Image (cartoon, rainbow, N blue to C red; front, side):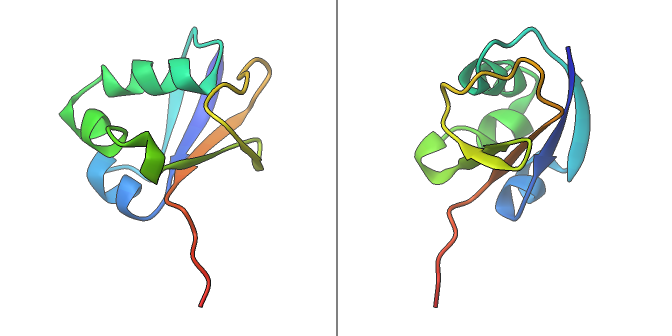
Length: 83
């Protein structure tokens, strides 16, 4: 399966990309994170603390155990704060 992976804010800075197209065999978001982290040190650093990362699957907030089957887009971003 091929999915677009988007990175926002400091995640984008650590990975060095705003978006990438990824071929994956992941079943869940957690599996995808493991695949991405294994790619290189930049992905590993960006995804090392999952308590500081939120995820959306096709623009819907999801958790790490959400399935990725049929997804077109997975986005990773830091928690948002109001003010």
